[in-house]
Length: 328
Image 1: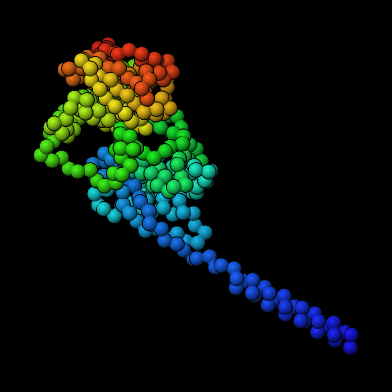
Image 2: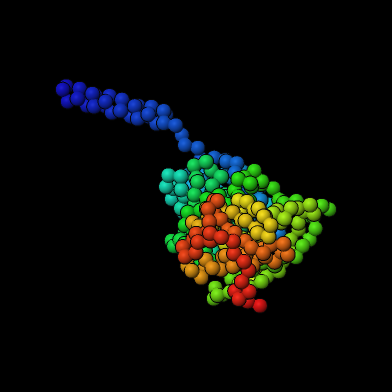
C-alpha cells in the first residue's frame, strides 16, 4: 500500500513538473524568424566622382548579423544602371566585431582590388558610410584577411568616420546630399586645369591636366577650392602619387592680393602619411597647382586655422612656386 502511494505521488509530481515546463515554454516570447529593415546603400555615381544612395529593404534572418547582411546587399551592386559599387562582387564578409560605437569588419582580399584612385576612395567611402548610417556606429575599421586595410602610403587606414559625399568637401556640407549630381547646365563652362602630384620617388611634383565643369559666375576663391578638391581626388596617372589625404577637406579659401589662403580640416594632420619627403610633396603640389593661376603668386596653408605643421615642416608664412621642384 505504501509502495503504491509513493508511486502515485511520484506520478503526480512528474505531471506537475511537465505541466509547469509546458507553461514556461508557452510564456517564452518566440524569436521572429526574420526582420526587414529599410537602409541606405552607398554607391558611386556614373562618373565615379561622388557618392550616391539607394534606399533598400534588407531581410535579416534570425541570428544573422545585421551589418553583414547589409554589406552583402551592398556587394550585390546598385539597381540603378548609372551607379557603380567599385568593390569586387567576389568580396566575402567574414564577420564583424562591435566595440562600443566602433565596428571592425573583416573581408577577403578581393576587397582591395580597386580600379584607380577614385574607385578606391569611393569604394571605401561607400562601404564605411553604409555602416555609419546606423546611429550606434561612428567609426569603422576594415581588415583584409585579418590585416588592417592600408592606404596608398602603405600605412594602415585605421578607424574611419563617415566620408563626404564628394571627396574633398566636408561631411557636413554633404550630409543631406544623397542624390546623383546634376549634369552641367548652361550656367557652367569647361575649364582645363593643371594639378601637380608627386613622382614615384617623392622628389618632385609632376603636372597632370584635366577638364572640370565650373559655374560661369564663380569667384576666384570658389574656383581655387574646386581646384584643390580635384587635387584631393588624387592622380589619374597610376605613375603618380597623391599628396593630400583623401579624408582631408577644404574648410575655407580666401584670396588677398596675390596670396591664396587655404584652410584644411584636421585630417590633413591626422591622416597624413608623414615623412619629410611626403610633407614637402604636399606643400609643393598645392603651391604649384594654385600658382598656375595668373593672379596667384603665393600660397599659405593652415589646418583648422593654424599654420600647417605635420612633422618636419611648419608653414608659418606663404610659400612661392619653386621651379626646381617641378618635373617637366
